[in-house]
Image (cartoon, rainbow, N blue to C red; front, top):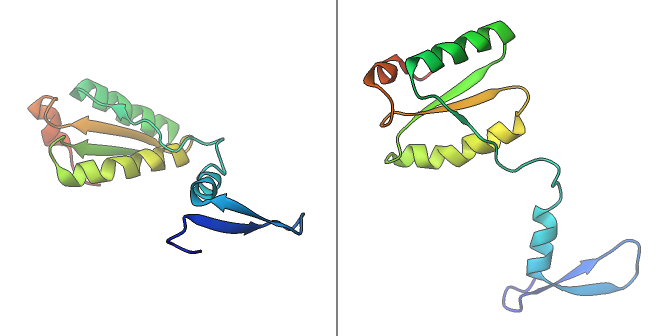
Length: 117
């Protein structure tokens, strides 16, 4: 590919001729290969201790793993991690439940219960 031109050649097995395509078209084809699965999943919010207890009890009964992200809106590492967790939530939609707790918007008693595990 010539970086300066903005064009690339594509060779198809079914036809002998080559077509001149813009790079933009090739990128779109590469990125839109599997549209059946969402690219990002939603994480459910936990707002108080009772809700956390309910989530933990449901996970025990279903024997389903969960991931709880204890985050803050001002934290750079949390901001960096959020889209990665959303992508994992989409990938493991039926196998793992994803939750998040915004430590600035919940009672302090809930924040004290959080740990990294």
